[in-house]
Image (cartoon, rainbow, N blue to C red):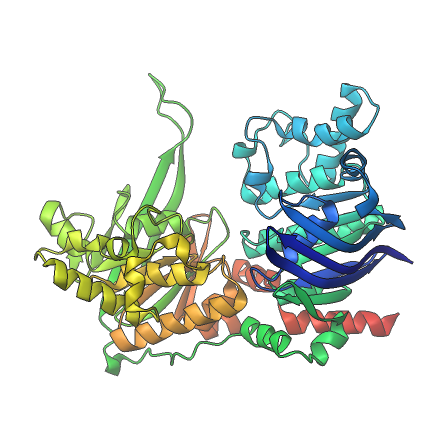
Length: 544
């Protein structure tokens, strides 16, 4: 029996058509994966089902939940269905949670709104639900605020809010996008267990084919607001018909075109960066007059090298010390101990003009390119920002020429210099960020989760661009990521961090093929793998 039926759904916002003839079916206790790139209509399909669309939206078609036509209900009636009959887990938990309310208040709110229970009973149910999602009262009291939790813990609170009343339908919109692989695996296992215990049906929205293959019984692939292909998971992947589906699969198993180059004969024996004995500590709690404050060691005696033209991956879970180490390497934080030698000079000991001259040899590309750009400035000014590190003064014409050359080098147009950041897509903005990093012709670029927020096809394009630039310009990369698939695709060597220490390092293929440390083995086991997921699902079907 079908729990949810969506038949010929059309959505227009203003005068812009968004969804076109979308039809979906979801059975009781079934999991449906909706796959597609940004702008394909995945999230707006989910919001149409929830009736949470922006003003100016026009909807036609049929949406029925458990035989009830949702389009015929008033807003008051829909408010009664939301939370009780269907719940939604949003992509960014910090945006979904109210920073001014405790986690207990926010989970209990759904109970108080929908149930005729006392406040005490609502909080008891909230605590019971938080226990179910792995946030026991002994460690996570109801009085905690969202900012006191990690990303994975906040996502568990959002899940608790969605399932506290055990709805028939749970919609999860990219619930693990920003999480590291082990936290992601735990959240997905949690979702599977909860929907199985409650007998709920699940719609999982994602751009990660491996995750969807692992979680979903059936899959619908969307492009430009329409479903282009759908079917049972194993059958669909084994015989993909639509060119877009095949493109997504090819992009998800991307392998860099770059040739790995580690031979000393090619000059890779000379380190461009040599970090030794790096220690970074942060004080915990308030300062005390007569006692030394407790400290937390975020980076503990870390050392590694990067050779000229070499790509090195830095991998670990959230809190492992990756970004803290990157800030030391970029000379944004002064460590408690250790040295960082860049191009033969001590970066941390340098001061004034000497440090400024050294900084032009190292640049950074961050995860969110839009957040790292001033939206009020045009691309020409934004890309040229690092020129303040150059000792020589360039004329306006020379700066413009260098900016245009950098834009062309990353696959953009010279005329893009006169546009604003909001006029570009996410992938294009990341190209602009790379152009800005290249403008001073650096020896090393630190890329901190530079492709984690991009669709698989855009991600493949950016990784190909990075590989090409590394080959042509002989620039080195420190590639920080929690996505081991990406690290394997782009790097020559990999460094694995856990709790502030390096637990394993070596040539990428050797470490991935024969991991020596248990932590590395656990990271690889938690990484979603499309073929492994399909094989496990096929074995399950044959055993039935």
